[in-house]
Length: 92
Image (cartoon, rainbow, N blue to C red; front, side, top):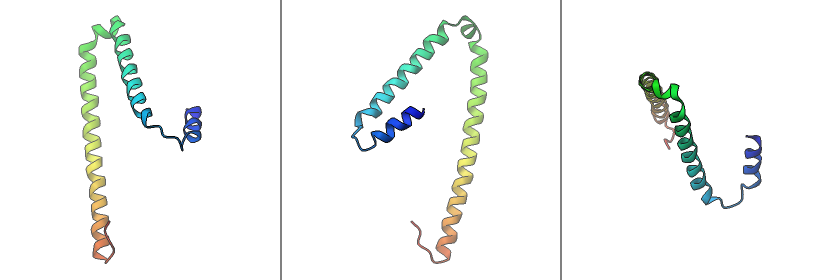
């Protein structure tokens, strides 16, 4: 990770438009290879039903928690802007 940060710092003034596409392709390749590895593991294939239910519960909890906290943060941000505008400050 440190070498990636160093490379990014050294190349910060270069035009790296293509880098986003390369990263996307590599991520898709890694996900594909992860699927190949999981599909080749007999224990995972046999336990896919229970893994699916656990994944559904964890995902639902994560989405619900993120949504609740995002809404709370939004309310705090809106309240701050409202107070600022009541004091005569600019709202940006």
